[in-house]
Image (cartoon, rainbow, N blue to C red):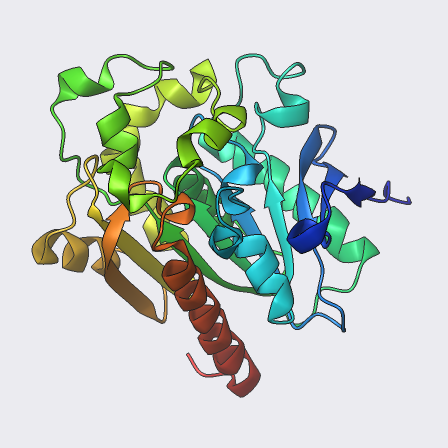
Length: 300
């Protein structure tokens, strides 16, 4: 049975954005939208980026400063970069008004990535990059990945211990306080908050309902992840604990052969839109290079 080919539109704008296109993919019967950047030569690998709660794929293609775009940077370094609107966001929002659970999203996203890989060259494999709720989905996706070719997972904006009181999680599905997501305003380029208005949306009810449960869910998901994993914690992270004891315990729960963790100075929860974005994205790509080297040598 033939699979529907991804639909790619014209570039979303000119200039530095000329290589970034809108795309739709079939996620097992759900049409997912997203953004795609392709290198000028044969790709070395496929980077798949998953945004956090209440955001969209454009989180990884910041418009306030071209230097904040993970998509453009990855393509310039020889990778295909695909940022998807997770199920319940973007094109699929009308089809899934209540969204999906994180585990269901993982199934949908695996199908979409498989459809892309079967239709286009992707290089040596896939790195999943997830932010916040998207990081949880990335780990769920990796935990049940069976098709081969998964190189690793890079997660920011999440640990497994809350740094906030339960009452602060009660407003599920609503926009959370500005300081929690962003931290000090000086961490972001001018124009960030005006331009981010097109990215911000409500969190679908089904994924919002799972928000408090992650500390209980994480151990089971982590044990099933068998590829290298890297965690990044922002200096001004407000949602999650990232003290050394917490980080050691959460990485120890992974079934991964290689784990990495890092604290990024000058960054708030929304790392990829801030002034520290390029530093973070370069380190994501450095981790991808490490994963490629491990895959080539067959090292554990």
